[in-house]
Length: 242
Image (tube, rainbow, N blue to C red):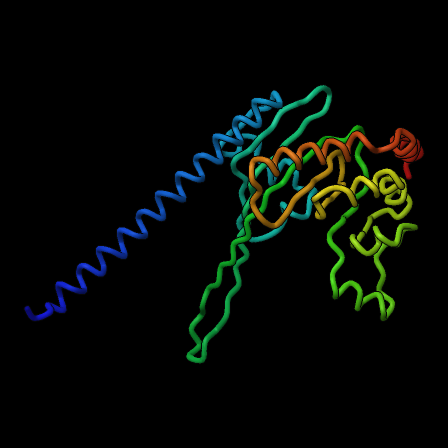
């Protein structure tokens, strides 16, 4: 029997469409299972879970550099509430950066790049100046060779692991004391920002529910590990108006 090209093409399209439909269904099912696990995690900590963003995370925590990225941004799968006397938040977050180029014919072309992240935030006892930590990379090491240094600490291991910038050098050394540096080195997270009345832990990827739990615990340990003398120093500064 001769092959009917049109009929063959039709069935190929049907099969491809069915494959994509099954993949989309599996992805939706996995995402729903993840949401259910996040809701269970929140409930186990006495926190609330919302698929949407009832607390407007990017605006509420606008002091963090992460929530200033991109031209459009929003949070979802938001965990929030208080544990004891401290407030917490965790979420998925995405931002889209838009650029424009012109082709050889003078036509404008739009390019959107979306980055997906997860984040955990813990409240501090008192606002602190901004302090940024991220993984040290090859470019940082190359910059150091020609004299561009980030903050350097007594621990060579810590210096090799983290690139550190701070709005206030003195306070940065108070925050990153020996105990906190050990906690950071032992932890699985490398992108951290202390800023204002909170500390942020995040990665430029989406976490599993287990990683969400670990990130909340890690953020809590950082917040609770800050020394009392740091807050006393900041209060004295505020009273002096410096």
